[in-house]
Every structure is written in C-alpha cells, then in structure tokens.
Image (cartoon, rainbow, N blue to C red; front, side):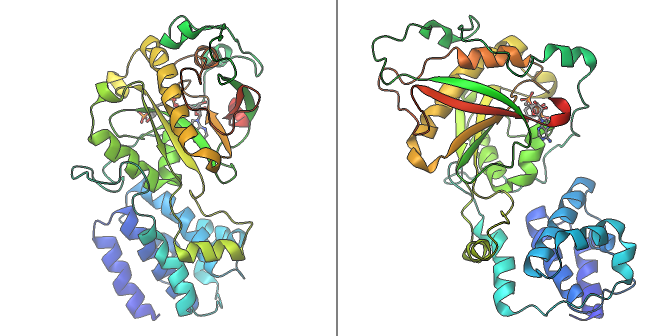
Length: 376
Ligand SMILES: Nc1ncnc2c1ncn2[C@@H]1O[C@H](COP(=O)(O)OP(=O)(O)OC[C@H]2O[C@H](OP(=O)(O)O)[C@H](O)[C@@H]2O)[C@@H](O)[C@H]1O
C-alpha cells in the first residue's frame, strides 16, 4: 500500500464517525498495509486513531497491536507493543514484513463479519442498536477504600446457612425430597484474572437491565466480548427492567470465523479475544447509577437470577467446562461480598425437576470467584 493511499484512508477514518466494528477492521487493514512498506514518517500510529473517542482509541490500539502480530508472526506483540505505545520507535523503524497474501487477508478481515450476533438476543429484534458506541461509559471505579476493604471477607469466609434476604433461603439446608439430584454452589475465592479462563467456561457478572456495561468489570466484558455485549443489549431492549430483574442471560461464545479457526489451529497458544467463553449475565439490579436498586433488593434478586442462570448452564450440557465469576455486586452495586456469597451458597438447586449442570460433582458446583490480586 502506498503512503498516498494510506493518507487518503487515514483521512477518511479520521473524519468519519465510524463505529468500533467498522473502525477496527479498517485500521487493521490500513496498519497492515503501512507495515508492508515503510511506515511513513508523517503517520505515527497514534494518527491512525485520530478523531476516535478516547476509550475506543485505547481499545483499538491494543487490538491493532495484537492483530498485526497475529498476521505477521515474525513480529510478536512485545515488539509491536513498544512501537505502538512509544510511537517514536515505530515512526522511525523500517519494518520489513511479508506482504499480505490473500490467505492471511481473509483470515484477518473475516473476523468482524463472522462475529455477528451470537446466540440469544440476536434474532427478531428491531429496536436493538448493534455496537456499543452509544454507551455512556464511565471509568473503572476507584480501588476500594480501607473501609470497603474491611467489608470484604477474608478469602475463605463463607457460610452454608441460608440468607433470609432471599426467596431461595426457604429451600434451606434440608434438601430431602430429591436429595440425589439437588446440588449447592460452593464459592471459592481466588486471586487472579477472571478472563484467563479455558474455552467453554462461563464467566458470570452482575448486570443492570438497561443494556449498559459502562463501568467496573462490565466495561472489561464490553471490551473483550463486543458480540456478547450486543446480545445483552438487545435482550434488555426487548424487555423491561421489572421483567428482567432476578433473571439471567447466558450468551454462548462468539462463533469464530473460518479464518479464526484456522489461525487458532496454527497458534494454539494464542486465544482470540473473547472467543470460547460464555458470558453469564445475572440481572441483580433494574437500573444503574442513581436509579440502581438498593443493596437489599440487589441481594434479594441475586439468588433467583443465579438459579435461572444455572438452568441455562444445565441446558448447555457438557459444552460448559467450568463456571467462574467475579465478586459480583461488590463494587458498583455496593453489596458486601460476604452477603452475596452467603445468598448464593444458601441456595439448594436441582430439586423438583430443575436441570443439573454437567459440571456439578457430588452435589456441588464449585464456582471460583476471581478477584484481581491487588484487590484481593
Ligand atoms: N477491570 C476489571 N477486571 C477484573 N475485575 C474487575 C474489574 N473491574 C472490577 N472488577 C471486579 O469485579 C467485581 C464486581 O465489581 P463491579 O463494580 O464491576 O460490579 P458490581 O457487580 O458491583 O456492579 C455491577 C454494575 O457495574 C456496572 O455498572 P455500570 O454499567 O457502570 O452502571 C454494570 O453494568 C452493573 O450495572 C469486583 O470484585 C471488582 O473488583
């Protein structure tokens, strides 16, 4: 690709209001073209993102570097990372990449097309707006204060007693009628990265019912699983907060394109962003921000929402390999983690014909609750 043509494309990217779905393939293509020749001195990597909303820029920078590295394995993200972040090194470096073959082009640019609307929420809705560009995003909440930290339980704090705040509490500890089928959820706290899950894992997070993943871990989900976000948003827009409160949505992994599948076979170590994971949304608050439900109400909605999610997980059979979560409700929703944990562990599931997930072993479904090490 010639620098002149690049400039034209650059100008068009910068001037048009493109959604991130449109932008990412565009900049990837442009970036790949530029890298095939000498990166023009007048076009720094930052320029590729000029005019885009700030958060979108940051996200695209990361994806840009990863994608370029994928299609040009001789340059790993470590090399490109410095180039992308430092810009100057990139500007002055002559990068002798192999030209794109039609094969690699296909593998790269097919991605966004093939990731359209996974699973639930994707059909028959006319009101849902695809893409997350109109989402009112906020920044990650500030780390917990000392007081908040004290509220957080020690890693092994748990209780098997039922939580009186939840409807499920009535199930109690004496599961007798159908004891063989019944099961409980045991939550194990662990520091680490929620998202470093194996394929087939369900990643649970608490959601509002307004179709916004604007802060905290929800924003991280939004960035990693854009298709899941669209499915969630459509699901919300098709219903009402009152109907969704206390229910769940299980969004299957985005179906990889044939290009992605091939890529994965070739580079087994490299997991494409967002693929392979189910996203488990539990609607524990009707709204967010000032309209957010009270901590008591959020807690009350948590058990039925988890029950609903477990039903959906069971329907997936052995396609689900594990279930994990973040410390739901404990950040923006402001419910002490110990309370949420107690509510979930107090539930008895699987009775009265309720389906049992394949991952249940000896009457227990172990769910690891991951927390970032610095917050643990
Ligand atoms: N980047 C990250 N990576 C990894 N773990 C992260 C993280 N950021 C936070 N955590 C942890 O994840 C747990 C839950 O904390 P969060 O505050 O997220 O969620 P929550 O369940 O209390 O509240 C739900 C509402 O948060 C959003 O709200 P908005 O849209 O902004 O209205 C939603 O949309 C809902 O409405 C806590 O253990 C955090 O340490």
